[in-house]
Amino acid sequence: MRPPRQLIAHTAAGLLVFPGAALAQNEYRGIGKVINKAMRDTALFAGFIPESGQPRNFMQIMGAYTNGIITFLGLIFLVLIIWAGFKWMTAAGNEDQVTKARGYIKNAAIGLTIILVARMITYLLLEIIQPAVTP
Image 1 (cartoon, one colour):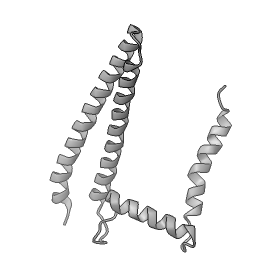
Image 2 (tube, helix red, strand yellow; image 1 turned 90 degrees about the vertical axis):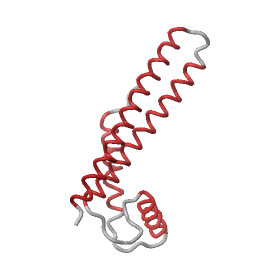
Image 3 (cartoon, rainbow, N blue to C red; image 1 turned 180 degrees about the horizontal axis):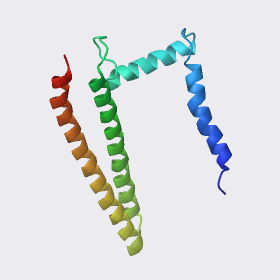
Image 4 (cartoon, one colour; image 1 turned 30 degrees about the vertical axis):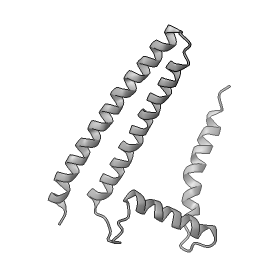
């Protein structure tokens, strides 16, 4: 049984709207301070906020987002390879399942290769372009 579209739409809207409303306050009290510190520490660790406290320029922010997205996609493909390997191991000699698992592994390996090449190209471009546009 599929969930109604209206339920999915309301859930998505609630997830998008309510966090923004909760973070609209200027003062953080109680648990808000803990959440704010955790978010700031995460942003610092991810590289969105430099340790020096200086604001980042557009290229640095876009590079951090791009690297984050590429890393996330790489993890997805890695999980797909592991999942397909598990499917292969549990196929119990069923050639149909083995063939499907091999196809998944092949496709995930191709996707992982594309992601790694994209990451190398992104790194190269950021190393060449960023010094040229940074004052």
